[in-house]
Every structure is written in structure tokens, then in C-alpha cells.
Image (tube, rainbow, N blue to C red):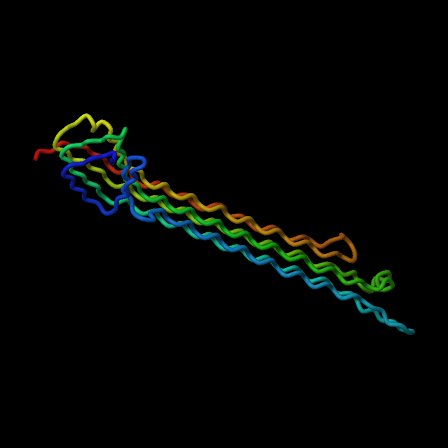
Length: 257
């Protein structure tokens, strides 16, 4: 035997899901929850700088020095791409109307609820790519350095890290619909009826991507041991979270035949 018996029922709605196990009726659209935004792509790493060429010194009565060359700078890391925005949750059917002559509810309770879809979350922003390391300096002939014919080669600076990308925005939750029950004859069983509306929860914003690390500076022949490292990329922050959907209205009212 079913837990609920209705006589002369008129129901006007778009979709209805009946859960007999829990003596509940949920009014909702199929697949009502919004989908989450896609995560952003990570930026590519910067290229590694080319090492400098070594110097040389010719033989003979009038030797000549060919000085070592500097290392090339590392390439900058690419920026990450933004996270995608979430998709809005679907609104519940705008109206559920049930007209009943006599309620006979044999279960402990009868729950009737309008349920809207939750909004999708924003995708996470992509991280910035790391900067490439600078190339090492070439090495000069020691006699060329001692006579200061060659100034001493330096390493390439490290590449800058790419910027992290902004997280995607969360999407709004769907609006709940109205639930209305009309009845002709009152019965004690009507105290078992629980009406409710549940709006969709707004999606949260995606996390911002982290900035890429700066590349290491190449080794110097003279002076400081290394050339300057690259700077790390910026971090723009998370996407915006969205609001919940609106509540619907509930009504139980006696009508005349």
C-alpha cells in the first residue's frame, strides 16, 4: 500500500520526482545543477639561455685575444589562462499546484519541496610558467684576463616567471518555484504535510593560478658568482562567488467546491 492516498487530484507542473521511500515529492527539472567551469591551462616554461662561447689566445710573437662571450638571458615563462565561468543552475518549475478533496496520509509525514539547481563553480586559473635559466658565461684565457685585454664574460639573467591567471566566476543558483495546495475537506492528516522550497546554491569562484618562478641567473666569469635571477610572476586572485537563487512561496488553502 502506498503511504499517501489522494482523491480527485489536479496537479499542474512541468516535472515531478516522487520518492516513495522517504514519502517525499520533489519538484525539479532534470539535470538542474550547473556545470563547473574548466580549469585554465598552465603557461609554458621559458627557454633556457644559451651558454657563452669560451675565449682564446693565439700563439706567436704578437698573440691576440678572442674574448669569451656572455650567456644569453633565459626566456620568460608564459602566462596561465583564465579559469572558465560556471554555468547557472536551472530554475525549478515556476508553479506546482495540487487540488485535493480528502487527504489520507498513512505515513509519518508527506514532504513536498520545490528544488532548484545549484550553480556551477568557477574553474581554477592556470599557473604561470617558470622562467628559463640564464646561460652561463664563456671562459676567457687566463693571460687575456690578467692583462685585462678581456673584461670577463657574464651570465645571462634568468627569465621572468609567467603570471598566474584569474579564477573563473561561480554561477548563480536557480530560483525555487511556488508550491500551492488547495483542499476541499480538512483532516487531521494535513498536519503531516511539510511544504518547502529550496533555491540553488551559488557556485564558488575558482582559485587564481600561482605565478611562475623566475629562472636562475647564469654563472659569471668575474664579479658576482651569478647573474640576476628572474622575478616571479604575479598572482591575480580568485574568481567571484555567485549568489544563491530566490526562495519560492508556499500556500495551503481551503477552497469551496
